[in-house]
Figure 1 (spheres, rainbow over the protein chains, first blue to last red):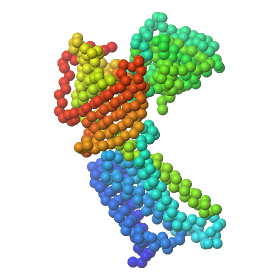
Figure 2 (tube, each protein chain N blue to C red):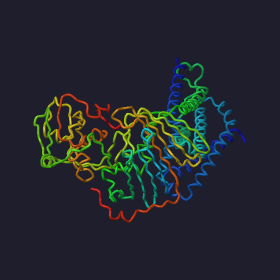
Figure 3 (cartoon, helix red, strand yellow):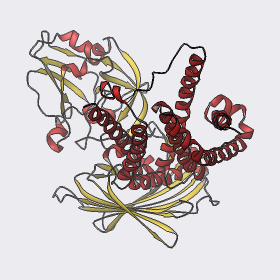
Figure 4 (cartoon, helix red, strand yellow):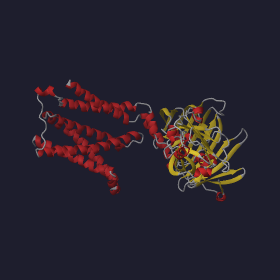
Length: 372
Length: 238
């Protein structure tokens, strides 16, 4: 067999094996096919693995034949293409091996392998599409590769040699290996800990209060005072308050100590309605809220409470707040931890300077309490 | 000049690949933490199991809980005994079903039926789902080590200061904590966990250190749990 024919058959075999791997991989990857062939899932996985091994063995076997071909063709693009194919083969084989062994002790590595394996498979589709397009354009004489530069032209532009390409790929593979190894021996990182699943549960509220006895709500005497740097200070009874436009939505509640209550239905008055009612003076940039327990206070920038979901809440999960939940009125700001959602609110004061709230002063909690 | 540009681009690409690999790869300790997280999460999938939980405050046992859990049909029994004074204890038992739970105290004899949306549920449900607290602790890991002894994986995690609460005991001003776990080496079945917490000494606190132990047994073995007929007459807690 002459060399040209040999290269043709090698190229064809390589292409067919990749096509088989892509097809069997697609059955494992795409939901529609996975469901369609659900009864043969394990057989297809085994088939994919066997073809994968054959593919890598053939890549290794044909390398000694490909090297003289690369040497004989001076165009760096050919070297680049072949280096890329070898790198892809290495990437698929290493990640495929990890997925095949499926080590239960290395869950992160397994997930990373799956992502890389899938990424390389999608990448090859785009590369092959470009490869075929170039071949077609060349065949139709719509595209001519740039001529190989001679030594005279060497200094006129950035000449890329085949040696540069080999260096780029070898260095790239080494960089990936070193990056992985450096990380492997590092201690647990903060970013990893932050990514560990939040321990959320659909339990219910744990009740925290700073006094042993909760304030008692008497509808006859209860008043909400809104005063300070406002145009029209008001004192509202509970019935008057409930006549203001209300809003209802569902949102999770997160406590700074780590627990959460999921899917809570909040009903109340958007705080913006209160601002509209009293008319904030320009110097009233901050808001201080007081709890009826006479101890707990919280402060906010007025702009932190203008979104529709920042509300003075009186109903929780379709039921009026009970005493321990802050009856009859509490704040809820969905972007902030629970300690900012002050309970038993009975006074709202617009002020020009911001104080610390109860936990900010006592324990150094963050003043804004945004959920990180 | 051209050559410098060329190599600068190559070095840039290598740096990018190094950074990407470093960023996306996990470390050995992180892999071990994922194994621990998975082992703790697996507890919720056990069909049946028994657990014993003990809390010591300054070396004195203050809370003891025993539980039996069955997944299908869903029923968990928890017996709790808390120390009130040197001579007095407070005991009660709870039965958690899928939609409500029952609290039973014997002195005087009393049954209460409670919705999961009731404010007391948040506190009490912690005894039904003991693993949540331990999963939260993992997020405070500073460093860890693993030893293998007689087919058991023993992990020791040093924790950063944190704020939490367990079975009604608030843990604030934690200066340091050590968490230990024991897993079977092959099956990764969680056997027991222990945490020792050091708190900042303060005259307002009634304890300066706390130890909490949970042990699991009879995993996926038949367990007897029955909701007593007296529970049917339980008053609903308002």
